[in-house]
Length: 379
Image 1 (cartoon, rainbow, N blue to C red):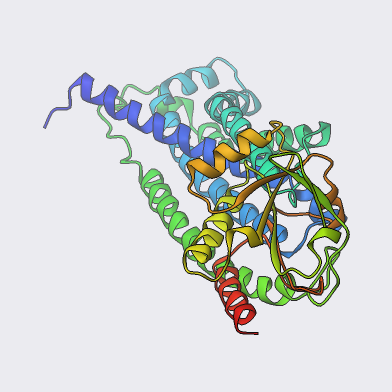
Image 2: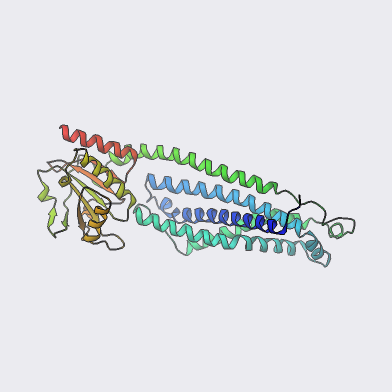
């Protein structure tokens, strides 16, 4: 069956798009991992943050390995297509170093554009994570740029090394010989490319399985280290620290005014996805009769976009959350509770003692919250 030029172009375009996306994903994951490495070195990362960083490093390494196989395969095919040109270069006096420089330059041109796009996406994702989770602090500086540049050059060298050696070992006399039917000789069916494709989808499957295991480990961490620990934020059995905030009418509400009252204190932000999940869970408990809406104080700290009390009321109303709107302009609550991750939920009894706390959210915490409220209502 004869392949038309149009089909050849379409097939080549499809291959180029696939390779572009693959390289971009690999470098995006690498940039994301690099931006958080300083947290691990400094010891500032908590267990959950370390799990996220380690998972991104594993994903980046696997993606780079699979992508390297694909690029090496494509460059080997390119060497076969350009063997006459390479043979001519060798015949007129080009050295092995000249040929290697030629192949590495072509490899760099293939990698550069998608790599830059991937790095940009990785930086954007890391900055987004820093906004929605204050436990993650990204570091984009000169050292980060230097790491990315050196990684790009090393990756290019490794991808182009095997094709360059293949090109250097070509005998110009044989390649240019009239007895070698260069044009009629069939080209490889891209065995390395097929292997790389299979490996790429295998990588996605492995990452999916890894996420399941990491999720189970995070659930255990929440139970042992987050819900019942006595870390820097106030923990269970401790007295609630002094705090104050204002409601929509400008009325100041403080910890002193809430004495002799059992209540839930939720510290979050409009732009925090976990905050929506926690508010939705609290609204379910209000509907089930486990909570009164007046027992919930959902305090929104001033967000990066400068949320106003009107914006927060609109946010709660549009999402049908059964809580009132409050905002902590002075960040008194955030400082009092040493909030390092959002949302942070505290259940406080009539004596001002914290009976349960939740830093972040998980499926385990949702169950723990329901059990805590059931126990609170039966006591």
